[in-house]
Length: 313
Image (tube, rainbow, N blue to C red; front, side):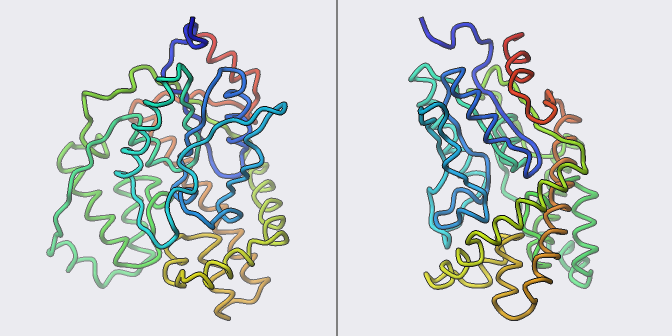
């Protein structure tokens, strides 16, 4: 008999803002439920970006048993990778896991990737809108980001917003999606989804605790090789422009290495940016709930609480 025969679900998803211990909970549940973990992090797919993306590969082991993980370190840092490719890779990996009669556990904080899997989006191509671009080209970057957030709340947590060109394109795509399917917010759903019975758990802490965890983790990473990691990426041919597109740690450390910020200025600005990012992540997850995705929130990622919710299914 399959070890999953008692479960009502064919996909377990664990999401939450940054620095909330999602991986730890996923590993505990994978160990208990005979599962394998699929990363839902848009930056952990890149090789050589370990500390800044929080891969923490040493966490994928419990009681001497290694927990298999997927979609980490699958492309080089100069290669492009997007949500459409993630959907394709997820579908293959999750199918292979289920063939082994094991439980796929999708774990991460990139809400757009998770939503694309759960709602099985067929991503539509958006043609350039010259009239819209002309209207927006003189807007300030900050105003463009605010416009994007108005159209699709939380979107700037999942979309590069470092240049006006990128934000205008994101606005263009978001407006096109809303025109096609009204306020359903995003892409066309595929009725042939292979995920039939997912369950979604959300890890959360009080906001002040998250802030403390973010700050403590950042200082630890800065003191344990994160700057050197970025220096190595540059040495291996990754440009400052490319680092800027990755956002957060890679953007601000790049600015520091170019002499645009002192080390202390970089640390303060980066800390603030990560706090803002966590807030945007939560906005995106709340928006997912508004669009019909049930999230069972687990205070502080408590294992027994999570297991109890899963077992009730």
